[in-house]
Image (cartoon, rainbow, N blue to C red; front, side, top):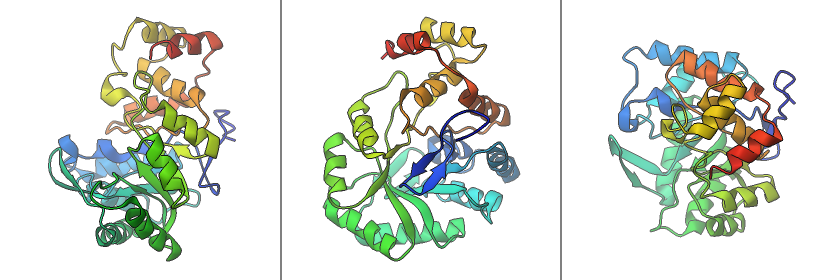
Length: 286
C-alpha cells in the first residue's frame, strides 16, 4: 500500500509489486516514435530520474521507440536500477521510419530483439517482456514458445501481450503464464472491456495505452469531464487518470510526457478520490 496515496501496490506476475501509476517512455521520442524528442538527451534523463524520485516503480518502454532511443535513455538515467524498480519493455515490431513499422514474430527474431534489449538496458533479466503484436504469419505457440525459452533461461521474468482480444488472451494462457496485457483503453475508449474483465478474474496486470486518449482527454474533453475536474480543482487529464485507478484494481496506467510539469500533474492524479457520483457521471461517458 502506498501510504501517501492510499492505493494498493499491484503485484505484476504475483511477485513484482509496483505502484499503479507508472511512467511511459513514448513521450521521450520524436513524432511517429522516431528519433529523440529532445536535442539534449539530459532533458529526458532528468525526467526519468524525476519519475522515480517521485515514487514511480514501473517504467514502460519498447525497443522500437526511437528505435532503441527510449531503452538507451532508461539505462543512461536509471542504471544501476534501484531495488523495486520494474522495467517493462516490448519486442516483436521493427520500425523503419516515422509511423512505419512491421510485425516480426518469428522465434529467432524475438530472441534477437530480447537480447538486444538486455544489452541496451544493461541488465541480465527483464522484469516484464511484452510481445508488442502477435504476428499473424507465425503460430502463437511458436511466438510464446520463444518467450518461454527466454524465461527458462532467466532472461525474462514475466511475459506480457500487447493489443490482443479476449479469445487470443484465453488461447495464450493455455500456452504460457501471461502476467500483463497492454491494450488501448481510456475513459472514452473501452472497446477492450472484455479483456479487462478477463484480467480481473486472473489477477493479470492491464497497462492501458493512450490512457489520456493520445492527448484528447487533457484539454477540452467535454462538459461532464470538465465539471468533475472543477469539483476537484484538477485538470481533465488528472480526472481521466484517476478514473482508471478507480475503475479497476488491475489497471496500471503509464502515461508518457516530455515535460516535468506534465509529469508532476499526471502523478498527482493518484491523490484524487472520486466519489460515487463522480464515477457514475464518468462511467456514463462511454
